Image (tube, rainbow, N blue to C red; front, side, top):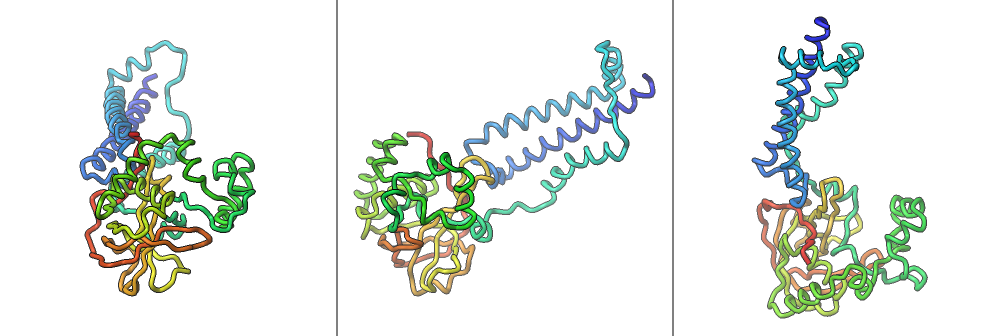
Length: 318
């Protein structure tokens, strides 16, 4: 027993340090505000809880590593061998798996998602609810969710091949409101936007405004609009067009999607990818990849600093 005691105390101490390390890493993200680069605000209470729990468990592990704590461990009479099994190399590898992300979290600089990620993930114009202009009646009744449930393998194959935009369509405005139950909220939002002299798109209302523009584009054509985001271009875009894009996050950075609004101007070539700008223009329409989407006819733009909240988030308070 005496030979096992130092070994058990050492491992308990290392585990405590690892737990406290994770707690301090999350605390540093919270204090600096960079936690929102990776986690949506709605998930922050869970992060706060995890930070406190990891710290408490880490302290308890260090207490267990003391001579008194190990004596209690050895005399527990549970009939179980509490010593850590395996060779030193195996133990080193196991602890290395946990220590590595802590070290990298403190050492590597924080980085926002940018146009290079958008190029890999693809972009959803507006809110992603655009209707295909060439969809047949047989396909317009099938939503993306239903297509996935009917044949998941075929659905993923279409996404990988980039052919999903021609075979899958979004629900109509009536279907969207019926399925989601957002009738009153969006109708009130439409009335509010139409009553305003100029539509101002903010971080708080971004996805909502994009939704009503998609579903009720005809009602907003000719309206003045102000929107901000980073510049992004797809390879097949005309030289006089670019996209003002934002990343939308529901839970964490792993589920982030790229939302964008196409802008048309003869000055498009002056703007480089990932430049943050605020544009003011008139809402019109265009067709892109067989989809009818909003288009902003640019009147003026201004280069801005990256906002403190670069991502946009869905609203759940209806």
